[in-house]
Image (tube, rainbow, N blue to C red; front, top):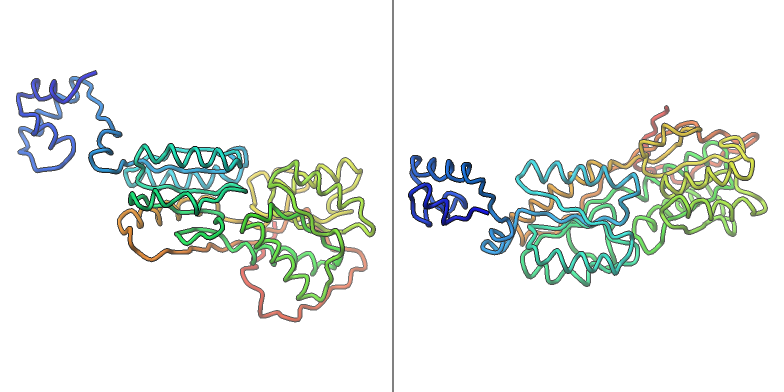
Amino acid sequence: MPNMHQIAARAKVSLGTVSHVLNDSAKVREPLRKRVLDAVAALGYQPSELARGLRRKKTSMIGMIIPDVTNPFFPAVVRGAEDVAFANGYRLVLCDTDNDPAKETVFLNELRGYRPAGLIVIPSSFGDLAAQVDGYRKAGTAIICVDRTPRRWDGDSVTVANEAGAYAATRHLIELGHTRIATIAGPLRLINAKQRLSGYKRAMRDAGLIESHGYIQEATFDKAGGYAKANVLLHLVPRPTAIFAANDMIALGVLQALRGAGLQCPGDMSLIGFDDLELAEMIDPQLSSVSQPGYRLGASAASLLLERVNNPSGRAQRVVLETELKIRASVAAISNGVKPSFAKQNRVRNSAITAR
């Protein structure tokens, strides 16, 4: 593999001139610069980004850690982050933790050795990112959390209005006449799962409805979790007539359980998810869902990260993006349902409804 000494010999310039051209560390007269670049092209020289990073104490790499690459929501987040990173001369390296905090710790430890310019992290369900970032911060590496934040997090973050989105979904079911409304929450160690459960509870309280015993179930953020907890709900007496699922993968598990029990959606059970995945419009029935902007989450996180790279000592920012309730065929008014009145109309936020 060619090296800088060979480039210098071919271009008939000093090693320092080659270094200045390749690293843009000093102005070089155009004739000399052209000779160096021609030699680079002729020899097929590829500079070592890691070596550059060691000299500069930072590379042009951005690490991104996500909890589950198989979840259809996360690729859009990654794409948004990668587009912004690439447009600004950075390269994104992706790591998937499988929601395993031990694996998350390994990635955090190993990435530090590559001197990344920054990290974009969607924390795992049981990780404690806040306890592991001191080394990065001491090295001047920017870190931002996206979609969810860990306990005791005091850094930058980009999330969505989870509580307001869940409130809008639950309120819509109530306005259709449903009073026996259950929810399948995500892992309640996660702040976004807690916020969505809080939105459900607030909508029930505002309508004067009491949460029935067993109507709140906690599940993993996947189809298997939704299926298992839906089967619990289907055996309750009285059975709920509507379910708010904390994400669309949980909602898919609910649909599977309904079909296995010979029940119809929305005839026997109305259902609303959260995420508005592309597949929400492709399944039967089309799934009503709280839409959160995955691509914008990633793009906003990358943009904020690059701001932090340029201004390490700036004040931490908490960006919260709005959600929107998309109504499709998975919900229906309940027969002879009595629509409760909301005592606190002025507390409705972020509840735009788009009929499809």
